[in-house]
Length: 453
Image (cartoon, rainbow, N blue to C red; front, side, top):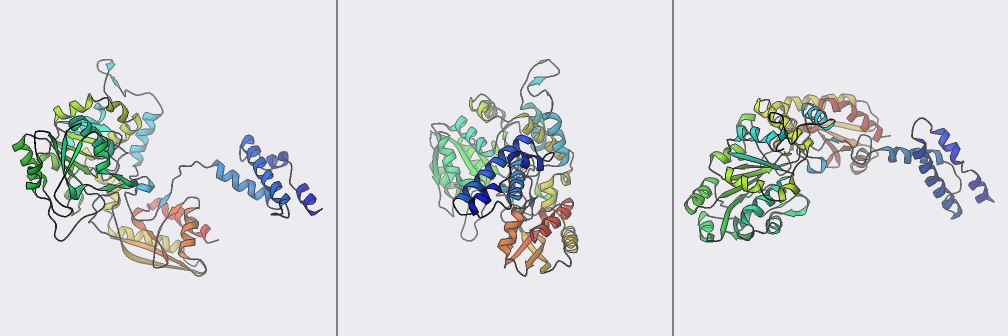
């Protein structure tokens, strides 16, 4: 008898639709209502539920869940600026507006306006890259893994590529440089040991089948102690003597020298590598460059012309939105407005600015019952395999709640709206101000208050 009463308590679909009319589409409400009602009916029959109480709340929860897109904007409070899991480089509003302008209409993507003929989509960024780096030519593909693959497949398929064993790294998502190299059809020749490689190791491996001498940015790690590696200058000198092109996979895509943006770290920019005589350089568009995801290849014109003719260019080519984002990002660099690149601005943010943001957030959380709020001086990282040796002094807001563990609070923040991604240290939630924008302080504080309810 109790089951029958409980089943009668399940409202008709039309009543549920009426309750949510105007908030959600009728078709969505009907679909969710049927799904929830059927689940309640089944659970009542199985004895897992005694009443239909809470059905409207469950329908609303499911409607909110279903009406959200899968891809959502989050607040990055981890302090990792180039955070691969969180989309790497955020674009500036200026760049985003230009992408919107190009994406919402027609454009001269592959059309030469001056001659009224079909053109090349690469022309929209090639001139910028040549001017910024001093390279003879440039090419853009979908990402740097694609760039590495294209270089090796075009210039070294069926031939040998000499590379240091200490540079055969694994990058994000378990992708390994050796795997990409082998998949390209090139024969990998490892030289040296894990910690020490000399120019004599390269020279000893060169033969009539050697197509490239390659150097790879180590990305997420660095080595200290009893180590030795071959400089770009020495590798270029060997390449010139042997008549073999030198290729540098720069990884992080640094377009300008670090001293120009006030950073002291060892990282070869695209331009510096070209000035040292490297024949080909590739890197990512969405790391230190601070643009959209892309693989950038610069270097000698004859080598890049060969890549243009590779059928894989059709597979690896970028779309109009990527080109729009990259063109405007490069334009900002040409104008010397480094502070307008969000990645550069965050990496170089002054400590007093970070401390001021931390104080603003602490004030918004003042007096919250059971919550201990402190400001701590910590260290953050550039991320994305860029500048692995560089420590960035930062300021964090530390949260400890009397009745909620740090893990539970972090989970609630992550599952909130907007989602907030944090780090945990010493049983406290840390909110790193380096990656929190001025305009995110208010929504961040609101998200924290909701998570504590």
